[in-house]
Length: 390
Image (cartoon, rainbow, N blue to C red):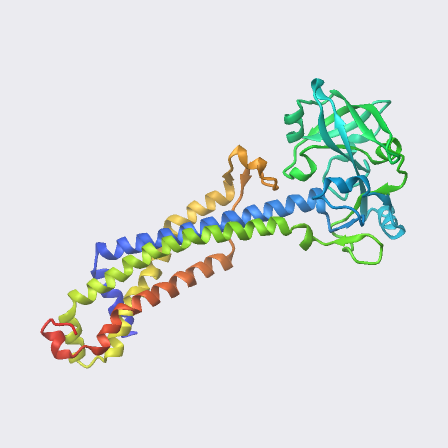
């Protein structure tokens, strides 16, 4: 306790030099926590939006379905297995049928995917209820990204051409019922949503689907249906891989900030030992052991991180709380990344993040503070009283 009081008094006695180090170290605290909160919030938002709009509680894929291979879509369809169809009848699953097609907006042509979904489903947040009813013109639903690339608006009609299950070309008109706003590009870019039974009828695929989505609070996917089960760990792996990549990139910033702060503390310790040679000799002459003197200087350096944590709390907590409440606005170009990022990201700061960052900085500061005082172990009290260092 005596060494702690002495270290704290010496630290405050250093004046401006101490507070400059504390400020630099507190800045590292705030930046590390802020960036990690941004990545946590980005990951949580993307996962939540993707689960609610597309992945549900997991999916069953037709054995030939590969979302990364457009050529597989021609054959990636088949009758829904009886077990999955029984889940559909009780509202625990919804089938989706995908077919390739071409639309002709404004005299142009554009390749699209026709996605059939049950208008009465409530497994996903896709506003499929807007597809109920309709006359000779097939009702359709598109997203904001699709509306931007095609120029289509609610009430517009557009001609679509497709091939049925026999390979025969056919065409009809679609009427855009609504333009939905969604964070998930997988249900928006190049896609048009139609009533499932209408799509089955025009493609001559009664009772067929490409994949089946399970309800989030229902039973998860399991083998035994003949279709490929895909759980959320598999479906969300791209989003989680992106977060790991961003975290690695952010680590470079963390290392740079810590290096600058630790260099300042290291230089401060070296200068302090050089200027306080007589004080060290006096302490050793009064009975303080070399180990205790090393502990004193190491503790002085480590206390920088304690004061930095307090300083970071003073100006960092209001700043981080404001960002968590108001969010962090993303550039418009991020919509083209292909991930479910909204216009604003709301950081998420956990207790583990704050405690872990504090512990990391404290350990690194302690280690750096220990390095210069090691020279004291070989110092003779008489040499220190004369102002000489070994």
